[in-house]
Image (cartoon, rainbow, N blue to C red; front, side):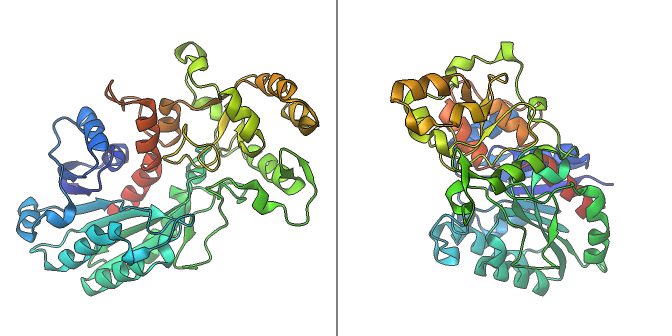
Length: 393
């Protein structure tokens, strides 16, 4: 296939660019556009020869876009207006301004791009912004397909349920052709339990009723009528996690963590205050687990709902540590909890779970906190790569 000229909007740290590489397509990114200075430094570090515009999208004229003459648009607009734990301001949120500008500009381009791929959070599928998107696509002559996918469907042990839309200009039977290939691109796992739905769900089947998901780990919400076993977990919670860990179509966490000699574990251990205050809320995984919850931009800074932590001491049983913990003094609690050697995943390990290749790296001056933040705002490279293959094929 001829080389595709790609416009990368909201380019972030380059997740879409890496997905293009992973897909095997012949391409040239004609411009990557973002206003986040940290993300742009990381993007430039990894793709020094790519034209990177540090501009607001709505500040770029129609003429400037026409001069780029691109075949494909890739974009992951700001998710905060649509996330379920936010204010859900939708198009009233100022952060949607640039996306609405794109929708206004698209039909007026002198040459419409052949392909469009958009990624966003669960919640976007029921938004007014989504309605305006599909209306614009239909009026501009695009066929499109919408789908909800979590990385577990490609064998990655991490929950990151996201909305995706792929569109192709003047394409007959595009939706039916894509539907027939979805199962091959995203093989079904044996379990479809939250927080890591394994099955890609087509929005053609159901726009609103996508699979249950718990990207934010709030175990208290799942305690309806069930007796708590330990660690605020019910029998239902425990069974769900057991089922996920038995799913052999998903790889183990240990395939994604750094070798012990390359990680200074002491730098990533949870501090005593965190252990004492938040131990019951932590989502704890072992290297042999086949599950982890979604990593957000607050990982490493906040505890609840930001991502799983790793139990480094694998010979200690989790249940034995938490049984009767509330009856102990603080000193005794800390002694018990410390046996687990709980630590944060390193930024490199988070990047691995998000499908970034080994040659992805951060500039030396980017702090650990900044690394977590930009990764939490990024996307799963492997999922997007497979969608690109489907869309172009």
